[in-house]
Length: 161
Image 1: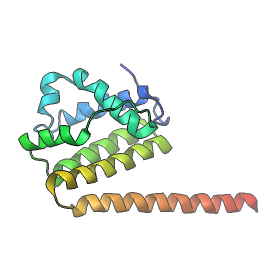
Image 2: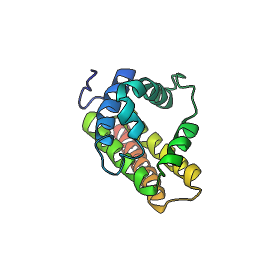
Image 3: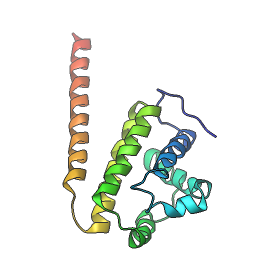
Image 4: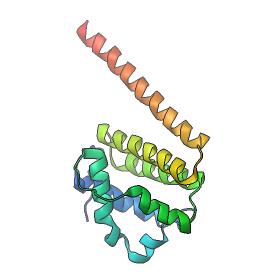
């Protein structure tokens, strides 16, 4: 089993695997998320982990490994266990918590931003509606990024003085 170097950035496939193992350990034990993730629970995480690693490695590092259709897979799950806003919010909360406990840095932040964008788009595609709560997460991240950019600009100005 791959383990994360706590405090290091999310930077390799091994890091992604460690993140996914811990994250899905939490997801599979979560009462709200047990329905949508029953297939992974029944088939075992090991059967699904390589595909998820390919997906996240492609999303985060542009590895080009994932060749599937994430929407069609989730559409099939949605027909059996309807996803609601609460499912996406819980998934994101567990994702953010797991990342924050394992990693820090630009890769970790990118993983949170990308997950939020994916959750927002997937929710909209699957349900046909927007969710104010997911919009708020997107807006909060945009504000956080803007604040970080501003702090970096101020820091750069101070260094030049």
